Amino acid sequence: MRIEPLPLESTNPVAELVPGRDAYYHTDLGATYLGDSSELLKLVPDDSIDLVVTSPPYALVFKKKYGNVDAEEYTRWFLTFSDEIFRVLKPTGSFVLNIGGCWNKGSPTRSLYQFELLLNLTKKFKLAQEFFWYNPAKLPAPAEWVTVQRIRVKDSVEYVWWLSKTERPKADNRKVLQPYSPDQLRLIENGYRAKKRPSGHNITNGFQKDHGGSIPPNVLQMGNNDSNGDYLKKCSEFGLDPHPARFPSDLPGFFIKFLTDPGDVVLDPFCGSNVTGRTAEDLKRKWLGFELVQDYLDGSKYRFDYINE
Image 1 (cartoon, rainbow, N blue to C red):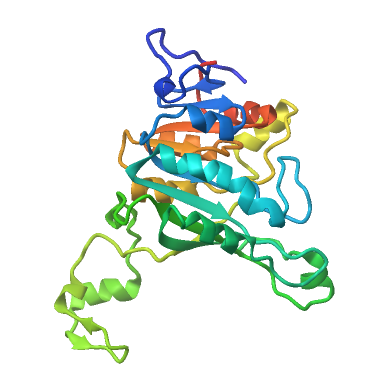
Image 2: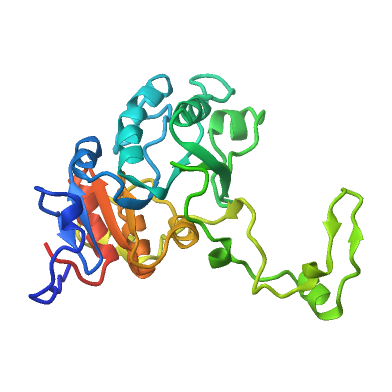
């Protein structure tokens, strides 16, 4: 990779948030740090982060190279991180956790580990809202139950918990409005007679006002296929294994836009190939990424046009 140095006067823009540690690399707006995030988080000052958005290793039956904990141990393992996340978040901040489900070993039944984790997290955090990431391109798995015995359907949804320290974290759904449907555009143009719907909802004349787009649902439909992207091409070119569990940039991007403003600080304590950092950089937010596996950080450099090491 060709690394273009930053201007001489440029410094790590978030160095004060991880005192005493050198960044693995940094850009104009953010920095990555190599190490155990349970230790790195302890260095971050209280009430200093606007948004933590992350996708930690899931409690899968089959072990992955990046390391994943058994479902029975998952809650205890993750609470060592979440206590620190709670501490570093600003009172107006949010914690967005993408966590997939898993199957019980040897059984066509689902583990409840992510719900056990949520119940424990809400002893401190508020559950602002639950989201569902729908990926229509997911492969049919587990093969034994879905494609061999044909007694289950493919699992295409993952949970995304939006948690906060207070009941009213910073949020503005006007930043994530979606294009109106053709039907809604017709209503705006032709008008709508105010009336009470059979459901009991009172639909007023304000329903036909053009607000610039429709409020998105809490089901986020996003594919996860970057097979033709520069990241994978560069990893192949330089003999690096790409991170095997990357989420699409649209996922952190939605919450970064929804829950932060330009200049706010976004942290991903399990940053992997640093999709979150790159997305935050594109959206003019400061960012921090922590990662335990050096190879993944080496590959993540290829997401940026320039870095400083």
